[in-house]
Image (tube, rainbow, N blue to C red):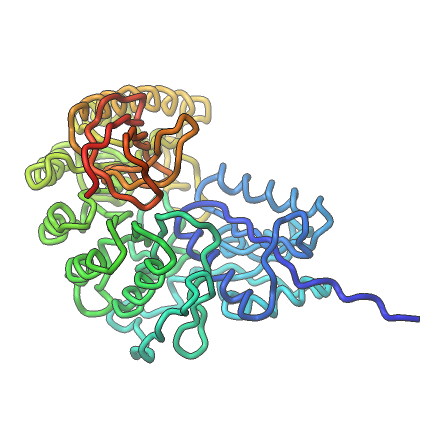
Length: 474
């Protein structure tokens, strides 16, 4: 009698949440491939690995729903990512369908999934404040510089193995735009945000490692790099050089094959004049400012333990547009925070009306476990928070449409990403980040291809989206 056939080592990797999670998934994919696992679709996988999001309640619920759906397929299920890290054993107790893994399991993820496949249920980790795992002083966090990164593989689709056998990433999707992580963690103590507690203290990646990964991505056909982190304006502080991002950006923009570099997740309180100028005026760097304003009332911002008010933020925008009149600016805002008054909302409305932002995200406040804001008085009920979200989301839609309409006649450099259904081409201008902002649909008499950078004049707008006609290739 023959022995049972062993289950195949096939895994489907599901990614939820932000661009930082996308990079984490590509690093996991590379490690899994290097340890002999085959990536496949959910229908054919023996294990489904869900990279969860734990940012806000809606994201948590989406992650739980995805885990339950995966379990219904009959595959073994494992959870990684922010929700898994944040709740650990508590999540495992509530969700026996999934094995809950920690960030600490990433370096040996192949072996962890071997256990999952074999039905060996390891005890889930106990969640803790990851900020306490590193020294308080940023200058003491960096280990000695690792060996120089090896040259990228000849096959750009192959996983890239780094110093000491560590694996950097394997691209999970094609496309001409890719995120590039420059740091992880956050040292800020915003009263409403739990991210630093489970993502940990701020740690920069070294420039040589970032440059090597940028070259590898360019070899794989990437034409735009989107730099991601929890707080890009802090880059370099733990390496002893707060101006390191200003020095790195021109080098990244000069990488062969890269047409554009975009910086995301900027803190207004840390946006130095030198960094502002480099982003606004360096050839190949998108004059794009993803600014985390969160509100415009000084009173609300102080309760959030954040900097600024309406006048300061408008002055910052004036500085940006003095350097680059066409600069793109996006930001997110929270309404319904504890103690928020009608006067605070009026301040926010005035700011939004005057700011001329290209992209505006409106979110409703909700208590997050372990945050200072969760214990503050003056809470709004859910219905009132929802009403404020609806009111300001409607205002945001109107203002974003007006901003897009104001770009009629502008000449933009558009990076072509794919062919549209009507025979035109879809791409993004410098003020449009992937996934979160609008797109530009381009008409051209000459044939185009994904990865082309074309100069086009804006001929129309529809909400945040633009229509444009090609003038010439750049």
